[in-house]
Length: 318
Ligand code: PEP
Ligand code: MG
Image (cartoon, rainbow, N blue to C red; front, top):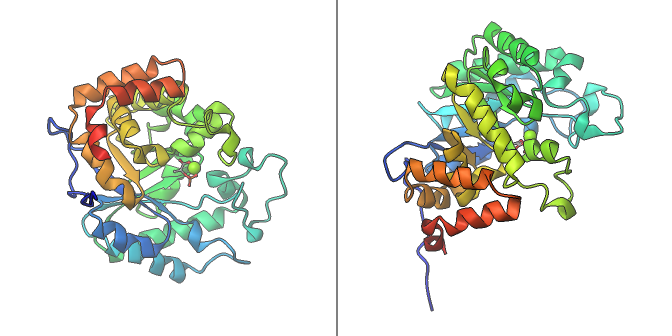
């Protein structure tokens, strides 16, 4: 019988030619953080804070938020931790918000849009993040979900600044934000692409419907083109662009994302080792070539096939 040695992540990912591509962890509850650090994650690229707010009749107290955030920051001293502000609405309704029922929740008051209804929730959360950041050594970045316009980005960055949070960025998960990333990144200091929602909105394919899975994949050349456009808009300002959607955890797609100009990848801790195994065996130029082949493909299946065929490192993954 064949026993396969469990691959582990080295804790510092580079391409074969030595270009660092930090691999970060997605964290959905404070308890995940220690395990992510244990797995060698170079930081946290997406700390989802919904856990603090869901299934409650009123907003959590600030002290409770501070304690939860500190737990995650404490697991990553001197490392980057990107905290995403509350992404409620749509499939994650919050009773205490009082947002009316919506016919199309995915296109409704969700993510940063909730802050228009209930600005005190965002203020309270930013205050809690700032307090937790001051008490721990992590390098804390903050970002907003579901940003659609430069004006929204500006408002968010301004709000963060009032709490001394100067690394304030935007998630790119609405096509309008990808197309005009250069506008959003005038004030936002970084971008993180949420490929799950970006795919859903670009392809008009509900991410919850398995029967639309072949449409709703980030291998779709149109989605990859939006990733490329996001990076092109960010480059002149030197703003870093990461990916924190599921796409980052697919080793072949990770190589494509790097080739499109993405500088860090955030994923569930269990994916770190396989993504590193592929990136460590390709040069950055290879990634650029693969990305172009994927962009030139007629569809998701063709893109996946052409990249996999030209990525020999994949076969070693087993
Ligand atoms: C995304 O949309 O890709 C993302 C990372 O956010 P979520 O999955 O929490 O919507
Ligand atoms: Mg999202």
